[in-house]
Image (tube, rainbow, N blue to C red):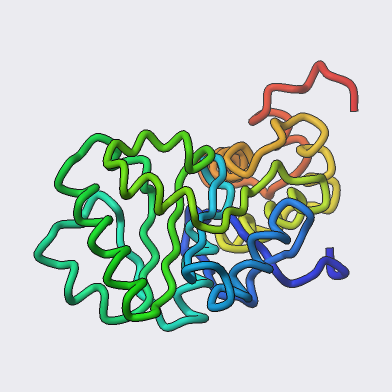
Length: 229
């Protein structure tokens, strides 16, 4: 795996490495990375990044925050009192769909958006699904979100999934045998969430049995001993 680009985007379960140097660029995340690089040139300096669970939104939010000196805020933590202080610099608001229908938090995000726009500070929003499907009920906020540049994190290809698994094993200080990851890739769901879950289960199994991470162990964890490959 030494020839893989040293850039990766996904939500890590253990001691997450969330820096730019930990990214693997692939077709599934290239647009998001390009828009992050051009955040100050985007209309309104605002960007929405969307994707499924564990697709890399949090990692990208950390990269964005490091790039622009911004702070990360969970949408669920927003309130009107905190908005003036938060709007003093760039802000990334995570999991915006989680506040859909919450009048206070929607109003807080609306005022935060307006104050950031007035000051010329960039804004990043993250969530699952397209922004038009976030269920925001405040019309003025909904229209402002719709005007943001948007990048969706697509399903990963095999090379990116393999790179993700290498990093996940490394973060757990595990060294799988060379045939483990190719085997797992043939039998797993094509998602970062599945990769994280499988590595977690292999880690637990290896620890419980005090075994190395081998294909035999991976076979037991996946329950695929009777399947070809």
